Length: 190
Image (cartoon, rainbow, N blue to C red; front, side, top):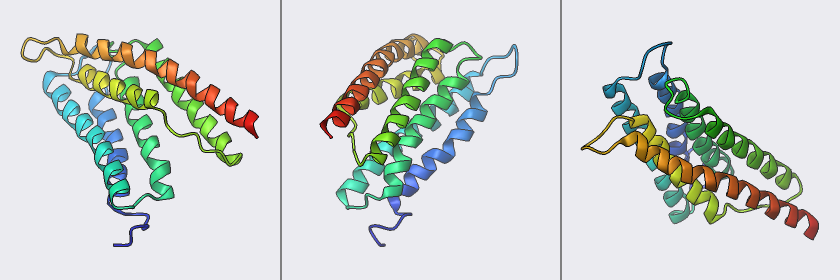
């Protein structure tokens, strides 16, 4: 297989992650006055975790086998943002996550994506920081636990999810501010 092929294994994994988003959304859909059942929560949790794990593999494969493509660079972060944001939005109606937390995450993701777009038109590349990677990890764990929601082996999954989500929200704001100042610093260097 051509290593620079647009549809190489890492890109296919990213596309599969994107394709899981509508399935997760449908599974998290709650008609008025209903809650998501335990079994549906468990299935959605497993699907969400599987989708987030593909993010580890696609990045590893792309770097290890020199299969990094422009399409992969575009789709990979987009897939992560869409999966987390769509899941969080769907967790608002069953009151598993407060809307204000979702608004912070969505605003940060839109803001950073806009800054990346402006930076690229200026010929700048602002690499992802360790803050952003830590933010993604905390949000993924938090959202997964909030999707699960019900106690597991005596552990309150919702409480665990909120704990990780609070940490993720702090890093969301911090990494967004950090990204903005790195962007401004790069602009002034020109």
